[in-house]
Length: 326
Image (cartoon, rainbow, N blue to C red; front, top):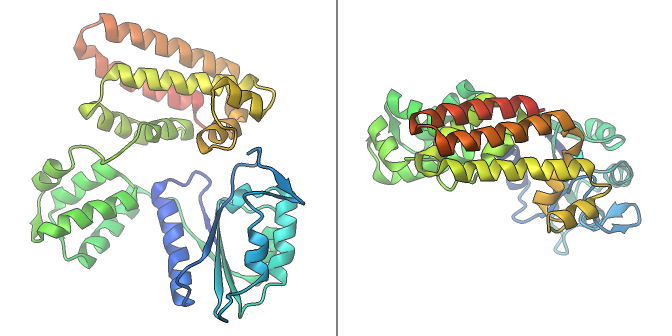
């Protein structure tokens, strides 16, 4: 089919997103399309300039769906985060999809959750649908075993366990880890994995804040443990205080531009839009309790014995998941 909808869970993590994009890559490869146009749909309150009924960042969909390759080959279009399309944009794109020439264009829409109507109906009636389910630890374990076989890497049972503890359901990170282990070849033990990957590589703190925002206590505690391998607890508290402060400002700001000016950011940037789009979940009482808990944790870390620091941060993390999570 010239049109495909790849849908994943609403709270898709790195693993699920990697799966969705991998499906898209396979579709283009099977269609013989070496290059394609990719459009990342911004949040619905992104503040983009509007051209007609489409925001500036979404407008390239129009020429991509209306014209094929100059050399007679089929061209490709990948629309990522299609669930964030505005209603007027969904209407325009639905009309274009209905008129698309299957011999000229292959279009793939990637969405977390549902796509706005009427585009959702058109995609269901005219295209294929691929559903990506929420990855669980057992799913990641099965994926890991198959990926290791493909790379001719033999994992001892303990090695697989440690890899899943280090990387969870993030199959993209697991793939990179296996690629590194494959260079050495042979059998990989738990000690090999521990020695090579003391912590999740290049893991920024926003992974922890994302887990908190999603209310995933287990994932947040794993991210906390990873950070504490090498990071200082007070750095973590400062970061979390900034997260709560930004959510508090977004909750009271009258519009996106005002909020962006308060945090000295660009209203079109992803970090600013991410907090702004989540403002409806930021209620005053949970935010107040979060700030109070951060203050008490800061006092504990500065005055109490070091043996109490980890349990303090673990309790704080669980509390923030419950107050700030979905």
